[in-house]
Image (cartoon, rainbow, N blue to C red; front, side, top):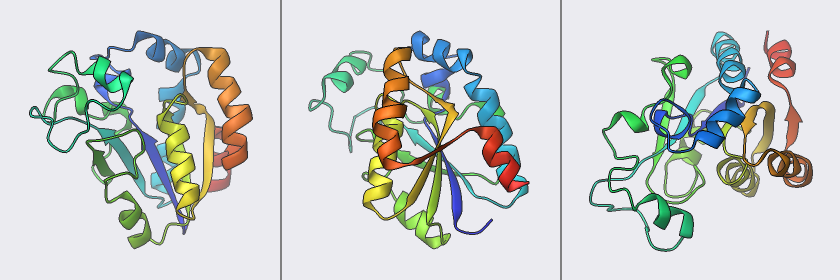
Length: 196
C-alpha cells in the first residue's frame, strides 16, 4: 500500500519489556493486548509491503545530544545513570515486534520521534504521506508523534487498541479529546482488514 508507514513508538525492553521501570505502563499494555495487537498489525503491514519504523529512545552514557535538565520527567529518570543507555538491552525493540526489514529511528532528546532525528526525511524518501501510530505512551510519545506529524503535513491514524497510557481514564480521555482532533482512530482489526 503506497504512501503509508507504521510508526511504532518506544516498544522497547526498558520501556514496556522485561527491563522496564514502568510497571503501570506494562500493566496497561497487558490489559489491552497492545503487544499482540501491534504484532498482528506489523505482520499484515509487512505482508502488504508497508514500511515499519521503530521510533526508539536512548541516552549516551555522557548524555551528549540530550537536554537533561529541562524536563522534570527526564530529570527523574536520569537519577539512574544506567537508564536507557545506548548499546544496552534496555533500548532494544521487543523481539516479538522486530523484523530484519524494519527501519529504526533513534532519538536522544525529547518525546517526539521527529525532533532531532531523520524520521521526516526517511518518510519522505519512502513517499509516505500517511503514518499509522502504535506504541506508548498516550501521555507523551503518541501525542507528540501525532502533533508533529500533522504539523509536518502527514495524515495520521492512531491504532486505538495498540496504544496505552496511564492512568487508564486519562489515556481514554487523551484518545477522545486530543487524538481525535489530530488523527483518525482505528483498531488493529480495522487496518488489518483494509491491508489484506
